[in-house]
Length: 322
Image 1: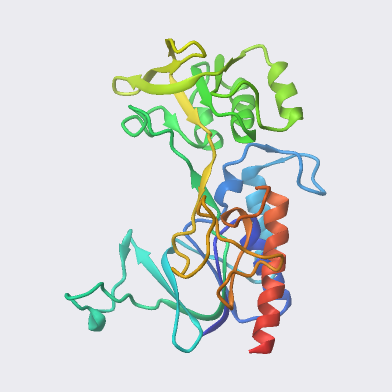
Image 2: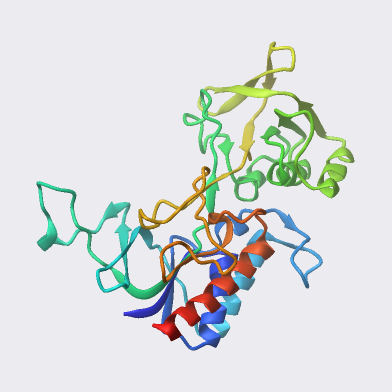
């Protein structure tokens, strides 16, 4: 029985872990992999105290900070569900090799299987972040990892001197195009809207890059290829189908919250984000959420870190009262 289980491996969970260690809680951090969306970010210039860093380095800094407190997050843990027990504690069920771990003595063919409680805690913080949203166009699934990527930091270096496209209109797409401009010979930046939604400083940077061509009002309709990506089709502002010859497509059109593991009674908004108050409390006592998985207005690393702090301090108060 732990005082606290923190689920996730990024800014929110790292900060939550640091504060839990400082409060000497009996706790554990479990995650599929450490780093989360932070590790897939490109250049980062808005993390206080570091004028310039990148996602991979910042994620390692988080891990190093945790290790300084003797905290070693348990990686490779696929959380399937968090449920509240009759005693008011929380049961965390995990998966191994993408398969649920089922308690053999609780199998019931006449109903849904009951799942083994792999971890139990008096309180839980869900800091599982988000995963990339798909375009849902022809060829996208077929060419995933064959030229279609959702992580420019991970896969961009594989396209030196190639012609690529980044699809999206927010900061993720802008950062992707900036990074690719230093690797590929030509970068198309495909934005379905008439202007970008990202930070002005990134838009200005894009406009200064000679090998980046921005195409506004372009709705991607298909990704084409043979064994690997060879091109893409989009519908322009006049409704005409245009085609580009590319070697890779980097999709950055937003994210979907990893909130399915939350108990069924936990309230979410229309986008699937877990609803929290200013103390990072959900509508389930003892259960907290922090970072991009929540309905916080802005998805920023520094905000996620702040929420991780709030969630742990709120959990400490809950434990003290109970």
